[in-house]
Length: 387
Image (tube, rainbow, N blue to C red; front, side, top):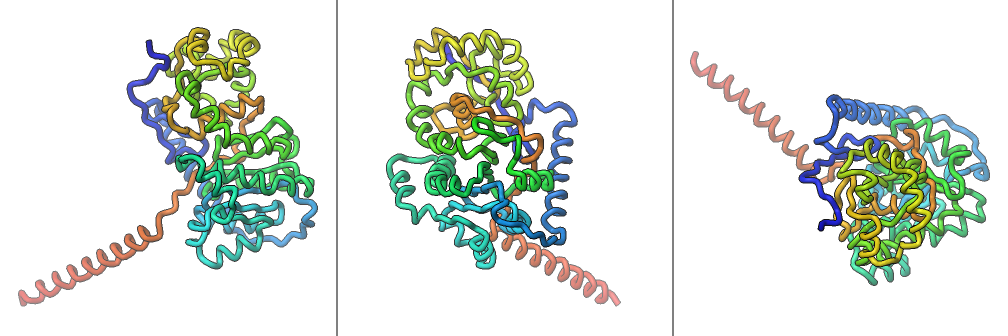
């Protein structure tokens, strides 16, 4: 008997996912058109925000209430630098990146980032990172979490001494739909939104959390290998979770991409159906959570006998590390309340074209123009030959 129900075919897309990945074959009529319009609007709002004339403001550094950490490649650097120039007076910037990718940025961009940074580290120059890298084989999507672990380990105590409670982990290639609202919350340190044990998130792309939870988030990387890629989890990837946390995570993290007993959620529900079914099965799930949450390290056969076959909104192999899915499960299994960001983090991910590709396109465009010009001259010449 199969333990996990698998759909025949899944078509997922992110190109116009200003806030979420979406299942193409299950979109209602007009939904894709709406997503495209919001993605276009986010680019417009973001470009207006970063290009508007900068107003000089006197901001005392001690008033800064947010740490902003970039752990990974600095993408879409031109627009990000314009954004950072507007935010630098309200936030402390820390960068943990690869020298190999960073060196490809223009020197003026590198000079600017190093000037605004309160902390800067290259993974190639961190012996602890290099030691971790050698211990096990890594999928490429694991490296962001290795960098995140070592950035928290390196600077956590420094941040506590600065008495800044809110940490914003982000990537640099999002064209924010509501950039002024995000600026406001960064200024305020996400006041009354972020507390110990409570965060807001747009999956694993960008999330804000309390510094008291930094140690728990630092440990996520190690749990990937010790727990989620452990054979017992792969054989039966489910333990009871608190249904309150699941429901509250709607619109925040990808908890619905995890596997759940089909007796709770049915077979391969949509995202909307998933949360409705969790609410419908709330009492039974809460009872199972209170009785069996200790089964975390129990063998897979016993868990199968207790909870039965599994299903999910999105079928992904548990033999590989699926970052968004596993990050969501880890947070809820540790009792973290992950709340929706209410469009603070919404915005299209800007795919910056490779410089070599841009150059090739420009060269091709010039050649086409020359060909067209020569064709026109040739036609004129042939026309004149008739006389």
